[in-house]
Amino acid sequence: MAKILIVEDNEDNRDMLSRRLARKGYEIVMAVDGGQGVAMAQSERPDLILMDLSLPVLDGWAATQQVKAGAETRAIPVIALTAHAMSGDRERALAAGCDDFDTKPVDLPRLLGKIQAFLDKPAAPA
Image 1 (cartoon, rainbow, N blue to C red):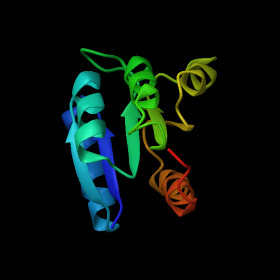
Image 2 (image 1 turned 180 degrees about the vertical axis):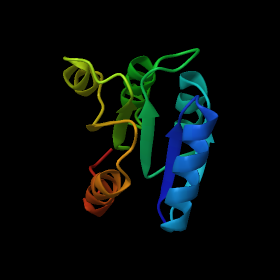
Image 3 (image 1 turned 30 degrees about the horizontal axis):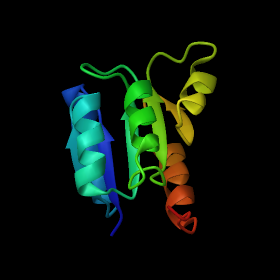
């Protein structure tokens, strides 16, 4: 069973995403800010991270940079999630190290397709 780390400060979004992904058979762990997300990426070693970009403590861009800078965590795919899809946000997220980008409100079938595509890829060497 694949483990997904949801880094999201909005309780309603966390609840909705975690319940829907758990029903699809994923193991879910959650963090409420970017700092906790980086720490949990290191301690939990998830198979994939869903990273909100507008986070307290450490925003999603900086948290992703830290995850991608860590030798043990750099190979974990990160999908950025944001409600503020401004021009340039996708490019900025990818430049920060995110592997993909999606918008809120979440289109679950589209997001599940992206998640599965990353989980089906052979792991990159660390």
